[in-house]
Length: 275
Image 1 (cartoon, helix red, strand yellow):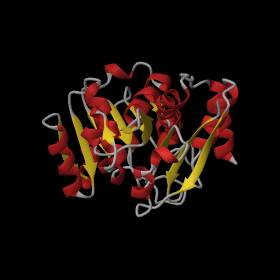
Image 2: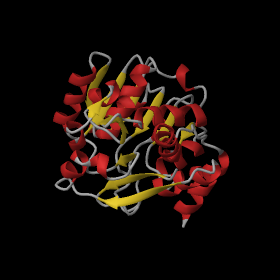
Image 3: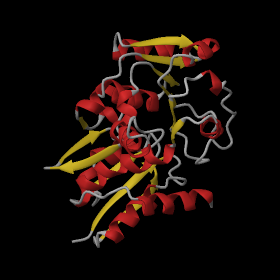
């Protein structure tokens, strides 16, 4: 039986999800397809209300749909906490939603820095958007003792502190050097350092020599932050791992097979990113 899933967003043009899922479909010899569709926030409600007529097993959601979709689907605990969904599936004519960015980030840490669970006493997270919420949620689940949220928008950062509680606190961007000096782990969830965006200017040498540096940006694959961290001898985690690992739960829901993130898959997507 032929089965289809898709990614929706606006624009969805640049998503690598069709390539990831297409490779898995081929590997597991599944008769199916993973489609790409540009969907605006205004168009989304009608599509979700009529989802069972679309002949889709489910969809991934990307910007700007993740938060808006929360009002139209049945959320699991993770998505309800974050009020953002990126993976939908149809079950008994009910449309369910979860947020796999949490599992995706933790999976990327497991893959690239297996020792990371011993480095959770002081974590610094740059940014306060949807990705920051997923990262903070995952790190708290894993046992992080203290998470410092560094962001220029004080109101957004304080909203995250209210959401996640006493193990989180906010520090203004001009104090970031102070935060780095005791950080066991640094995670960049902003777009700074992404291709076409302003650079992320940090004094990486303020970090302890044992710190882990993660950047969820994957274009370029090696951001300037990661390049500097590697030059300083620090353990690093790139953004491609999160992209790959967050895709696993959706594929499992839709096609009934749990795929693996392999070195071959990583290299195929990395090659596509390099153009």
